[in-house]
Length: 285
Image 1: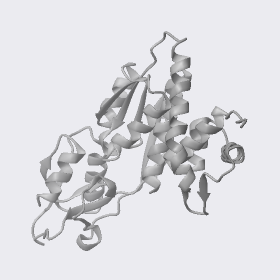
Image 2: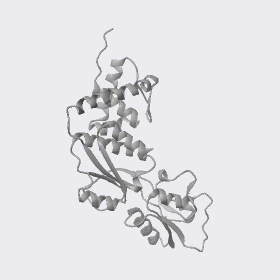
Image 3: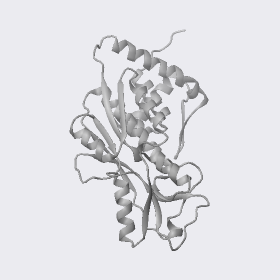
């Protein structure tokens, strides 16, 4: 029986849609349009003679045959990468800084999306405050930075926004006559500065009760009942509650995710685009 060869660009489009759960995100990585990605997947489905992806107005999910094909599709792309890398003696590398207020518990899955674009790419990731990471970016220690708070610079791309709220542990009680206890990261954390400024502007009496070296540490202090913190919902474990309305605290704005990048080489650029698209999916969800 004669088998038609597969278009590897179409296979790659299918894998990206499957991994990101979105034709839009897959298009961003590919540097093309959603309709172009959709057309590639449709041509692949026609070639295979079966539907790979079930499309609905709100969700994208694999069909039974699509799920069965996904592992083989990845294998095809891996084989292509090995063949191309055999002729390319250059070891590509990318160093990325990610704000601690951005990284979150999904970071392992996001790194996997990057690695899937080029398994031979050397990836270096540093986690820290946006201010510290941007200093390293300016000194060319980092090729790209995903920062949380707008620092007044005009060299970044805002690609998503995320809500923030005042969180405390379930059962935590505030005595009305006491200052609000607040847990935060140390300076120069932009979220810390923003939260303090908003509390001061609203005339809220507060005191700092805990300073953590990372968001996970601050979240742990919140869950231990040491006070409240300004955090994104996805940064906290189950059992945290938004106490802002109850305490009459000022609303926190949606904060941007800003990408600063000087990456131009194709393979690192595609991996960075995959990371950005994956973050957009996480924030959207």
